[in-house]
Image 1 (tube, rainbow, N blue to C red):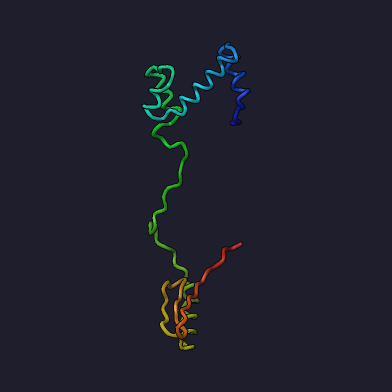
Image 2: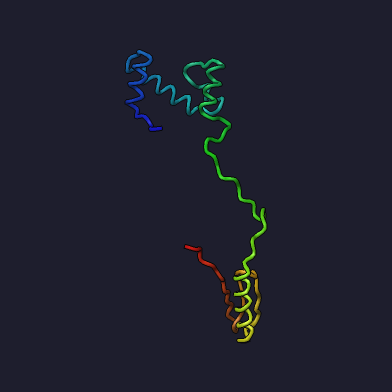
Length: 135
């Protein structure tokens, strides 16, 4: 739905309510105050008193206490088991064997499908294996 401009809203109010431009501007200003009044204290400051029915409609229209934007469900880590990748596991194993043959110190596979950490002298190294997406 396209947003209406202020002028279109003004003309619509004047036409439907058969009021003057000044009255229509007053209605628009009041509507804006009602929309911004989200607490009871702010609603009490409004220049006109709302009936209980009007307050209920205003509350519903301003969505007090309701989320207007649907948010994504939070991601629960570990909610489903990871699918193992035997290709990556075998590649990591080959890299581990090759590094052992070179005689590196402190060789550790920290993730059997992704990471190998080791030392050469006093320098620490990390090898990260990543698979590119198909495409």
